[in-house]
Amino acid sequence: MMNSRVDLDDKSAIVLHHYDYRDSSLIINFFLSDFGLISAIAKGVKGKKSKQNQSTLIQPFQELKVSLTGKGELLILKNIELGAESLSASWSLSGKSLYCAYYLNELLLRLLPSNTDCHSIFELYTQILTVLSHTINQNSEHYEMPLRIFELKLLEYLGYGLNLSFDIHSELPVKAEKQYAYIIDSGPTTTPIEDENNFVLSGKTLIDLAAGQLSDKKSLQQSKQLLKCALAQHLGNKPLKSREMFKQLYCLK
Image 1 (cartoon, helix red, strand yellow):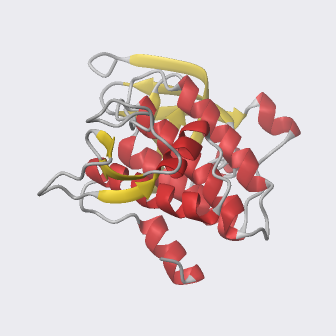
Image 2 (cartoon, rainbow, N blue to C red):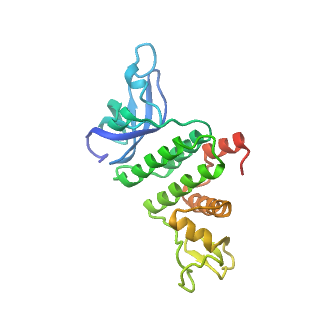
Image 3 (cartoon, rainbow, N blue to C red):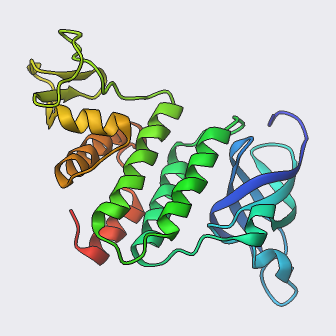
C-alpha cells in the first residue's frame, strides 16, 4: 500500500498515541481496524488558528472515523469524526483502568503490524476497553484478567500463540494437578530441559488460561509471569513506560 498514493475514507480507528510535529501539527499513531498501525500528520490542529473540532477528537480511547491520504509511511489526516458507536457511548477510564488501557496501547504500538487487516484484534481491544471502563475501584484481579486475555490473544494474532494444551515431550494433555516447566518457544513439559530458562507453573494455570477463566490469584500471577516472558521475546530490551509508571504509582511488582 505504501509504494503508491492511497486514499482511506471513513475507516474505523482509535488513537493510540500522538506527539508534536512542528509548530501547529501532530503526528498520530492510529489503530485502524482494516489496516493496523498507521501514522499520519494532522496539520494545523494546534495554536490559535487550530482546527478545534479535530483537536478535541485526537485523544486516545474514542472510536473514530478517519480519512487519510498520502504516499509513504506517513499519511495525511483529511478528516476525523466520532464513529457511530461513540455517539451513544464512550469509554470512561480513570485510575488503574486508565493505566491498564495505556498499557494495551503501548503493546499495540510496539507489536501491531501495518497494512494488515486487524479486525479481530481491533474488536477484542474495544471489548477490553469496555470491560476496563466498568472496572473502577475493584480488586486487582478485576484489572488483571482482561489484560491477560488480551496479551494471550495478541500473541496468537501475531503468530506467536502459546501451547497451553499438551506436554511437548510426552504429547499427553496437560493435567491440572501436575507442575510443568514452560519452554517459551515450545510449551510445557514435566521434564525440565538443562540450559533452558524453565519457568515453572501448574497445569491448572495452563488450563485456566486456555479457557480464559483465571479464577484465582495463583493462576493470575503465574499467567502474568508466563505472558510477560512470552511478550519480552518480541518487545525487545526497551522497557514499557506504562508498566514502569503503573509500578511506581501502585507499588506493584
